Amino acid sequence: MKQRRTRGNMKAVVLFSGGLDSTTVLYDALARGYRCHCVIFDYGQRHKKEILCAVRIAKKRACPYQIIRIVLPWNLSSLIGTKNPVPTKNSLLKTDELPSTYVPGRNTLFISFALSYAETIGAGTIFIGANAVDYSGYPDCRPQYYTALNRVLTALGTGVTIKTPLIHLSKAQIIRRGNRLGVPYDLTWSCYQGGEKPCGVCDSCRFRDKGFEEA
Image 1 (cartoon, rainbow, N blue to C red):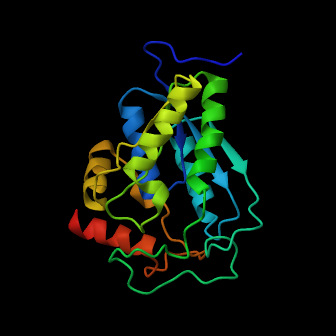
Image 2 (image 1 turned 90 degrees about the vertical axis):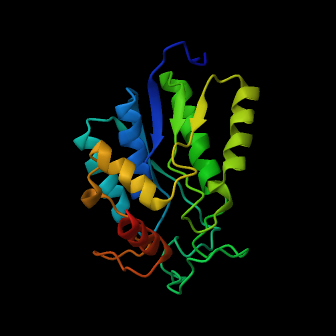
């Protein structure tokens, strides 16, 4: 039997990568009084260090966490494995072309797992650190995508709602919010490369650096 959200339910599932945005969302949800359960995904990404960072932060905040492993053998994204290089050109200006780091359907898959978990544990909310201001142009980071997904959840009668508190914020605004919440940004990982240290030239590093400079 499915768990339904009851009035006053403050249990939440947080899609957690250990990056700047998802960590800010986790701390924001905790500050709002939610009891957060983190879902961390291992989908073959070359930057697996983010998984270690996510686990460390979840433990720091005493949040239960699950690591979900997904195999995407058909994916040609430069984030999967090391066959295709991560782009390092200046791509801060938005274009109509999706970058090679886009993983088709990734957030849809993640939210499907999060929904299943939320219904199982009786959580009423799913949090995700999607952002549509300083981002690489991924279609599953846009507001209209989450509006549509919430309609689907309503149609399913799950009683679960997806929240995207950072969707309209710049990286600088996110960092300012995180600083007020005490987010340990030194423990987070944003770089798309699989190295020991951030490369400083991929989109994710550049947006992060830009955000800290402006903040």
